[in-house]
Length: 336
Figure 1 (cartoon, rainbow, N blue to C red):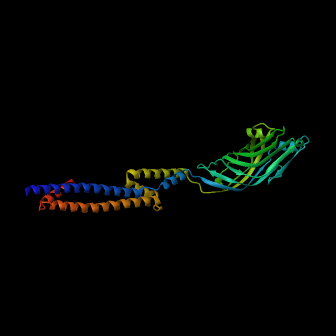
Figure 2 (cartoon, one colour):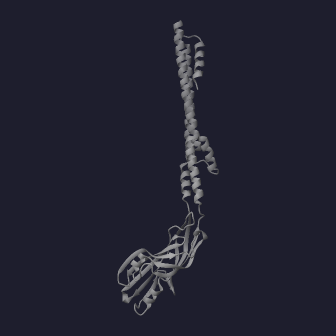
Figure 3 (cartoon, one colour):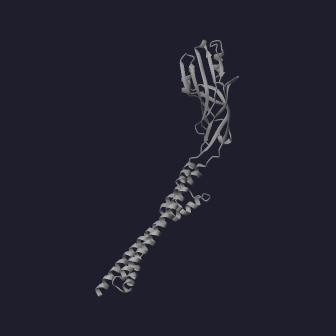
């Protein structure tokens, strides 16, 4: 009988120790599920960081429509064409016009960008129409077509032209989008934010590419001044410095969330006061809730099994409750 009681007490003690270990494992599972739920509540959606990066690089966009361009190419060249030596002429075509002393293009369109410092980015305003020069009984037959006004900074631009035909020397040429002339805008810097890029009589000079395609003149030769009226409609510019600070704050909040959920929750609330929960955050919350419910269900089942096991151990030859009570007190000391 004493031997049976000792055996029962040993079994009860073993069952109690198993129950204590199970409770510790259960506590670890519950703590892990709670941590997952807290992280899901504070982690921002990936799209938020992407939006912050996009804002940091944002700049206003300006749409151009109805622009006009007036330029005479070179007065001495026109005089030579119409003179007694070349005995030639010029013919505006495809929408281009001529009113002494300049050729005209209208209905220019395109896009301009206004950078963080107000600088005009490399954007184009395109026109349609051509001017055909002929002379020397057809030996000279050069067409300048479809000008493009390319702004390269607030104080400079380039005039691009399609050049085709034969030069004064009879050399065949077919060159699209030739950077034909440099335009000096120092006297009237442009700014898309004002709503118009208008300047009159801006000096122009022949480029090396223009000289190669056109012939007759050396690079750097002064050409006729250029006048343009470029109406624009711009979106509101984004302050790049402010956007960069916002993006950095969002990145810091994301980093903090991985190591300090409570601090990340506060940062997330400050960064998105007016924003609702994102789909990614809702998905994480659902996963965390499911994990927590699963842990609780497992805990209930485990406790019932342990209770049944402890009851069986107590009834197995002991006939009393004193060993079980002693073991329970021992388990309570072991449980964290």
